[in-house]
Amino acid sequence: MFAYNTVAQRAPMAAPANMLPVQVVRREILMDGVVRLSLTMPGTIQAPASYLPGQFITLGLPMQRQILYRSYSLCGNGRPDYPWVITVKRQYMGVVSTYLYDHVREGMVLYASRPRGTFILPANLRPGMPLIFVAAGSGITPIIGILSALALLPPEYRPHAQLHYASRSPAETIYLRELEALDPQSRWLRRWYYFSSQGTRLTPQRVLEQAGHLARHAHWYICGPEALKRQVLGLLKASALPEHRVHVETFVSPAAPLPVSSNVRQYPGMAGGTGVRLRVADTGAVLHVQPNETLLAALERHGYRPDFSCRAGACGTCKLRLLSGTVEPVGEALSAAERRAGYVLSCVDRPRGDITIASAGQAPTRGAAFAAASGYAASRRQAAIRRVRMLTLVGVFGLFVGFWGLTLHRASSTPTTSAASSSSQSPASNQQGTSSGSSSSGSSSSTLAPVAPVPNTQSGTS
View: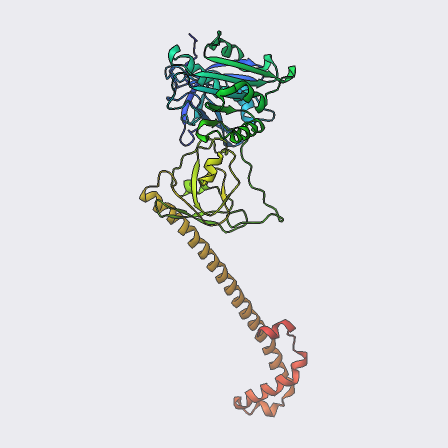
């Protein structure tokens, strides 16, 4: 029995959406660059939630002034009275994996999603059913949990399992001792190890040869680098193996933002556009998607609560079915069958125009939907009001300039005309009274026009 550190520590941040607080009760360095963390409900030694062997969780960590999400397989056998166990391999330039390896300590509180994933044992598992596992490197992490669960079954209920596991060397093979201890006599589990440092490499052809006649009848479980998975899947497809018997765990690198440059075609939903419309078929709602906004972000902004986990296009939890329109990029976490069925990854996909989706998860309450719609309408009204105010200011400024110019013209011309009238008229004419003043002023004005001190720009304004 392990001694767990259950000293509670206050959470360092507000809980991210849809996540639970979990406490690190045990930290073990398995080998250089690999750490195993045991996580419990804070203050206990129990799993924070039930799970099936092979499922994964997503951690939400405050890094670089934002919350970064990363998914990790659960390595346990599914017993709820034991902690969750994740195994993290430090990646080169990996911000989160380096943080978990270097800085996380026992007693700390993190935040995690509930367990998810379909990389689990068949629902119709029966004695003698063939199961073939293919793993490379840290791809063993979900598989060790599944094999550990099989080891708990009574001997007469266990299936026939094969494990094909590739790593660089025996010293760098994660869970090598635990795998050997599962079935020392190889009664139900046969193991093949492929060490590249010794010149033995795992290839799909070699795995198929070792599988023999079981290959066509087995359930296949594949977890490893993308290149290996594509090769194995291609070979199984050529063998006409039914898709429901092929299980693939896909964890890819977090998606980068779409590139925006002058030589890249711009779609309405991308940066620089005006946004597009998103129609939700099951509610009939038509939502606005801002430029370069993902489907998940748009739905959340309008009050919907769709499923998600990693928010990086790695796990496939956020998939939604597209009924019309197109999105990009193509989600690597989706299977070929899911893509053919129209599924897309809402956490990374952006519309290339108006689209329709079948459903968006939990719909907002009436108040939330009204607030979202009102907020969008209010933003448009505010923009219109700002434009009217600007035009009004420009108009008022123009009138002011015109009035000022007219006033300046009259102020400059009147004294000059009076002076000219006094000097050009005789005293006798001045004694004729005011009745002749207007005609005299008009003749004087035409006489002295060439010397009037009025700028050229004022003549157009007046």
